[in-house]
Length: 126
Image (cartoon, rainbow, N blue to C red):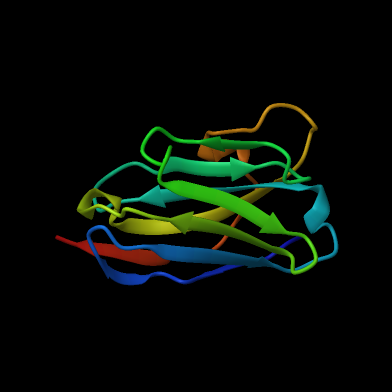
Protein backbone atom coordinates (compact mmCIF):
# COMPACT_ATOMS: atom_id res chain seq x y z
CA UNK A 1 0.00 0.00 0.00
CA UNK A 2 1.24 3.49 -0.75
CA UNK A 3 -0.03 6.87 0.33
CA UNK A 4 0.32 9.93 -1.86
CA UNK A 5 0.22 13.50 -0.58
CA UNK A 6 0.16 16.43 -2.99
CA UNK A 7 1.29 19.96 -2.22
CA UNK A 8 2.16 23.15 -4.02
CA UNK A 9 -1.22 24.23 -5.32
CA UNK A 10 -2.50 27.76 -4.98
CA UNK A 11 -3.62 30.89 -6.75
CA UNK A 12 -1.51 32.24 -9.58
CA UNK A 13 -2.00 34.79 -12.33
CA UNK A 14 -2.22 33.77 -15.96
CA UNK A 15 1.26 33.36 -17.39
CA UNK A 16 2.70 32.36 -14.04
CA UNK A 17 4.22 29.10 -12.84
CA UNK A 18 3.66 26.56 -10.12
CA UNK A 19 5.40 23.36 -9.12
CA UNK A 20 3.30 20.62 -7.62
CA UNK A 21 4.85 17.91 -5.50
CA UNK A 22 3.59 14.47 -4.59
CA UNK A 23 5.26 12.67 -1.71
CA UNK A 24 4.84 8.92 -1.57
CA UNK A 25 5.11 6.72 1.48
CA UNK A 26 6.34 3.16 1.35
CA UNK A 27 9.46 1.45 0.11
CA UNK A 28 8.32 0.55 -3.40
CA UNK A 29 8.23 3.99 -4.97
CA UNK A 30 10.94 3.06 -7.43
CA UNK A 31 8.67 0.37 -8.89
CA UNK A 32 5.76 2.71 -9.53
CA UNK A 33 4.80 4.56 -12.65
CA UNK A 34 3.47 7.93 -11.54
CA UNK A 35 1.08 10.41 -13.10
CA UNK A 36 -0.77 13.66 -12.63
CA UNK A 37 -4.42 14.11 -13.50
CA UNK A 38 -6.69 17.09 -13.04
CA UNK A 39 -10.38 17.68 -12.71
CA UNK A 40 -12.03 21.02 -13.29
CA UNK A 41 -15.41 21.90 -11.89
CA UNK A 42 -18.08 19.93 -13.73
CA UNK A 43 -15.50 18.20 -15.91
CA UNK A 44 -14.14 14.69 -16.20
CA UNK A 45 -10.77 13.78 -14.81
CA UNK A 46 -8.12 14.59 -17.40
CA UNK A 47 -4.66 13.13 -17.92
CA UNK A 48 -1.88 15.68 -17.47
CA UNK A 49 1.43 13.82 -17.42
CA UNK A 50 3.08 10.53 -16.50
CA UNK A 51 6.58 9.29 -15.77
CA UNK A 52 7.75 5.71 -15.66
CA UNK A 53 9.42 3.94 -12.75
CA UNK A 54 12.94 4.97 -13.78
CA UNK A 55 12.17 8.51 -14.87
CA UNK A 56 13.38 7.66 -18.34
CA UNK A 57 10.00 7.84 -20.04
CA UNK A 58 7.39 10.57 -19.90
CA UNK A 59 4.09 11.28 -21.57
CA UNK A 60 1.89 14.37 -21.61
CA UNK A 61 -1.68 15.23 -22.30
CA UNK A 62 -2.31 17.66 -25.13
CA UNK A 63 -3.05 20.51 -22.74
CA UNK A 64 0.28 20.02 -20.97
CA UNK A 65 2.64 19.57 -23.89
CA UNK A 66 5.21 22.32 -24.12
CA UNK A 67 4.20 23.93 -20.82
CA UNK A 68 4.41 21.25 -18.12
CA UNK A 69 7.29 19.01 -17.12
CA UNK A 70 6.96 15.91 -14.96
CA UNK A 71 9.92 14.54 -13.03
CA UNK A 72 10.66 12.29 -10.10
CA UNK A 73 13.23 12.05 -7.35
CA UNK A 74 13.41 8.49 -6.11
CA UNK A 75 15.73 9.46 -3.25
CA UNK A 76 12.93 11.67 -1.93
CA UNK A 77 10.03 9.41 -3.01
CA UNK A 78 8.56 12.43 -4.73
CA UNK A 79 7.16 13.22 -8.15
CA UNK A 80 6.81 16.77 -9.43
CA UNK A 81 5.07 18.63 -12.17
CA UNK A 82 6.44 22.02 -13.15
CA UNK A 83 3.68 24.07 -14.75
CA UNK A 84 4.62 27.15 -16.75
CA UNK A 85 2.63 29.63 -18.82
CA UNK A 86 -0.47 28.82 -16.83
CA UNK A 87 -3.86 29.68 -18.27
CA UNK A 88 -7.25 30.14 -16.59
CA UNK A 89 -8.36 26.86 -18.19
CA UNK A 90 -5.68 25.07 -16.14
CA UNK A 91 -7.77 25.77 -13.05
CA UNK A 92 -8.59 22.40 -11.49
CA UNK A 93 -7.90 20.05 -8.65
CA UNK A 94 -4.69 18.23 -9.49
CA UNK A 95 -4.28 14.64 -8.41
CA UNK A 96 -1.20 12.49 -8.11
CA UNK A 97 -1.61 8.82 -9.04
CA UNK A 98 0.55 5.73 -8.97
CA UNK A 99 0.58 2.17 -10.18
CA UNK A 100 3.01 -0.71 -10.00
CA UNK A 101 4.95 -0.63 -13.23
CA UNK A 102 4.51 -3.33 -15.86
CA UNK A 103 7.58 -2.08 -17.75
CA UNK A 104 5.25 -1.37 -20.67
CA UNK A 105 3.81 1.80 -22.13
CA UNK A 106 2.70 4.54 -19.76
CA UNK A 107 -0.99 4.55 -18.92
CA UNK A 108 -2.94 7.73 -19.58
CA UNK A 109 -6.37 6.66 -18.32
CA UNK A 110 -7.31 7.26 -14.71
CA UNK A 111 -8.66 3.75 -14.29
CA UNK A 112 -5.20 2.33 -14.78
CA UNK A 113 -3.91 3.76 -11.50
CA UNK A 114 -4.37 2.12 -8.13
CA UNK A 115 -3.19 4.82 -5.77
CA UNK A 116 -4.43 8.39 -5.54
CA UNK A 117 -3.69 11.45 -3.50
CA UNK A 118 -6.32 13.76 -2.07
CA UNK A 119 -5.71 16.47 -4.65
CA UNK A 120 -4.46 20.03 -4.54
CA UNK A 121 -6.31 23.03 -5.92
CA UNK A 122 -4.73 25.15 -8.64
CA UNK A 123 -6.50 28.37 -9.55
CA UNK A 124 -5.28 30.55 -12.39
CA UNK A 125 -6.71 34.04 -12.53
CA UNK A 126 -6.99 36.03 -15.74
